[in-house]
Structures are given as C-alpha cells and as structure tokens.
Amino acid sequence: MMGPVQVLVVGFEHPAFSGEILAEFTRLRQAGIVRLVDLLLVSRAEDGAVETLPLPADAGAELGGLVAGLLGQPDGANETGAGLAGDAMWSLADAVPPGSVAAVALIEHLWAGPLTAAIRKAGGNPLEETWLAPDDLAALEALMAPDGRPLR
Image 1 (tube, rainbow, N blue to C red):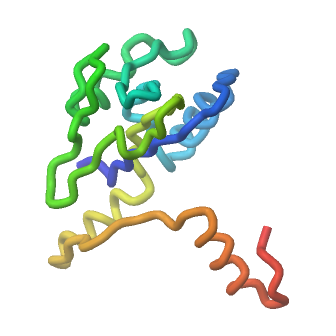
Image 2: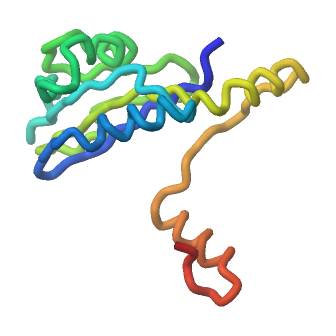
C-alpha cells in the first residue's frame, strides 16, 4: 500500500538547479520519510499556454511521465490538463502564474503509510487535507512561542 501522495508545485523566477533539491529527496528517501514518485518541469507563457521543459541532466530521463499522465497533460502539450479527479477540480494552470517556471512533484509520504492504514482499519476516511500557507505557518509559530517570538 502506498502512503499519501502530495502534489507539490514550486515556482521559480530564475531557475538555478544545482542538484541540491534532488540530493535532499535522496536523503529523505533513505531516512524513510518521503519518496519522489515523479517530477515534471513546466513553463507557463504570458498567454497561459503551459509546456513541459527538459529536466536537468542529473534528474533522470524517466521522470515526468507520471505527473503528465495524472494531470492530463500529454508530453510536450501546450494545454493545461484539468488534472486530478474528484469533487474539487485542480488545474496546473491555476497553480502556475503566467510567465513563470514551476516544478511539479509527486511526493509519497512514507512515514504516513502506517498511520493511514490504521485510520482506514478503524473505519476512518480523511475528509480534508491541506498545508498551511507560509503566513499561516508564521502565525501558528507566533502562537506557539511562549514569548511571542516565532520558533526557529
């Protein structure tokens, strides 16, 4: 059974890939925390067209197909896929601002697999999943800090 899989879209104004991100994914995989399932680079033109970009040479040529297939965007297409089935439609075009480049990663949370299985065994189903935005995270840290200063 797979652990929960997150779609993470990270924008880059001026991409400068040095291998540090992939090295961190390797470290996290070795620690049993997360696994990079797939990775796709895209650019969105000012007119809204989305196209795939080649990954850095050290990323591996086999990456990108799963993200493209899941999000409904064939390799090299200039259209955005509606993406991800379910009640809440999600669009890559909505996530990537015009005139920018983004990395779209599928990340399996290995640590959460046993917890998810235990929840399902108890008859539970996740009703909502979200991540706190940076401003919300800062507000939470301020609330948690005993002297009002953010924890760091």
